Image (cartoon, rainbow, N blue to C red; front, side, top):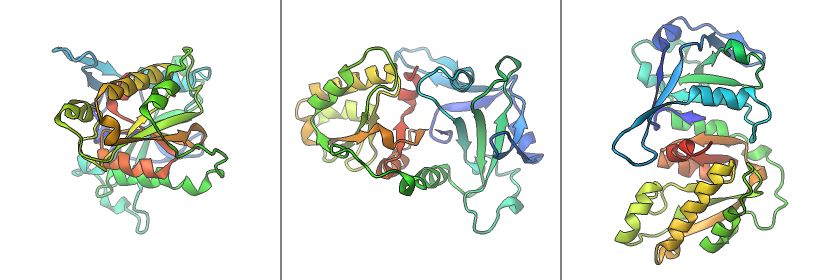
Length: 288
């Protein structure tokens, strides 16, 4: 899932308001109800400043997402990719009569049609527009948290263990260039104030206040694993930082979802669920 409300991304090449006005659901091959819309000119545009230079470069994430779903050999395997937007963004055209009492998280779902060269698909790229009044962060949390009770009993004695930064760097240093080979990932939280010298790094990692937000370090892809190792090394170089953060080791087998968001409050809520890997926009840029 991509949280469109907190990320610097935007849709181009389609008249989304026209599709919302004329919304008609149909059952897709995966059994889900949505409206199919053409993707020939669709772009999911973002502004990148990966190198922290003065010039920003536009990135179209859509071809990249298509390649993830239409090439089964890619690891990790994703079943679907969904970009979610808040219905309040389209308040002037949303049909409020669609809101069914008791269904607080009803959304309008649009499936982007595969291009002619990628008709063999193992998943779908979809756009979801929440009902006006249903915030995206609430929809994402409830959708991901519902699977917590369905996870298998943990058979891992070290799951949830607090480990040192040295252990974290050691975990991510085992990189042979392959993706998703690690059995664990790390959740870093800020538990105390810290010093002024820590501020730059905490701002970068969205850990601006104690007990608010979290940073997930993962080996989901080889590039993310390398980036995780670099973050751990950066933290390790900060004198006294281990007094104000804690690093929790978690089992990779528990994960069911990946959510990309820069919303620190949503990140904190999903971190407690234990079945969702949360990545920032910065990590999305470095994923592949």
